Image 1 (tube, rainbow, N blue to C red):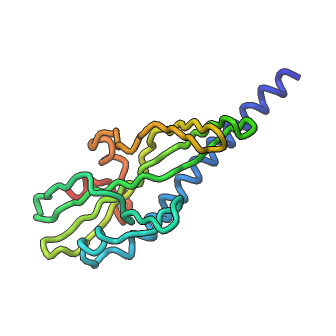
Image 2 (image 1 turned 180 degrees about the vertical axis):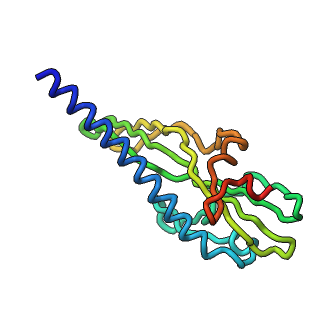
Length: 176
């Protein structure tokens, strides 16, 4: 019986790990599909584009996150680096509406745009960087809620540069 429990635990753990990996790959593939339509368009228009925020009605956010860095390449092109915060999963506990806790796993969608001197997007690169967990405590059915603030990308740029892949699947270093 003990061996059965161990095998069941290993199976469940492996299944959950596979699900999170698959979900990340699907989000990345969806991002790449959306990014493919940006090639040949003016960077200024793409950077200024807004999309609806999922959690808040009538609120908008930058479609490709906020600008976090820009680099000029030897070719004269400029790489604009964006990061957008998004939720990757959530778990919660509620005790009769008096007190509740929630934990939200965050990730950063990373978008790089290679822009020519003419201002047009020539290529893109993207990837996903795992973020922190946000822990919240709510009292009296959510009337009073406190959460830690984690809207800061803490990963190093050299690490992020190794994560992203260009439109044709090459590493960011191929642009150098």
